[in-house]
Length: 178
Image (tube, rainbow, N blue to C red):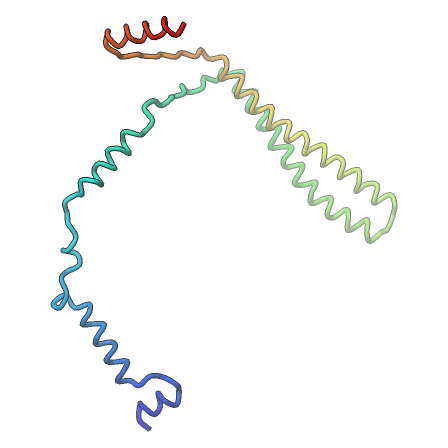
């Protein structure tokens, strides 16, 4: 059997067609027949792209607000550490409680004792309270940080750089509006 018959039996194209197509593709990619694609691009920036870049830079926000670092007192730092420790303890209790609830539910199902179900419901209630305490600790920590930063002096320096003529125009404009 020839390759053409095998290709025909497998519903494939003849090998000659595939080779011819491959050769055509190679000729299209050959740099001798076509100009070099890389060299066809200009290395000089186009004026409109440069102008767009300049416009983009001009449209950037002119003023940025820099917040001074928070100065936290030793007392406040200890308070934050205590809150973080309590939060971690509550989180551990919640995780242990979740595992315990799963086991207690299985025990209650197997024993079918009303007392076992009562214990499970009490444990669930305790875990709900622990979750509430955890959320409360998170808010306390946030408020403790906010209180420390609010005690700092806020200094705002506004600089107005204008010519005297512009300043007079601004003053006259305010008097006319007022």
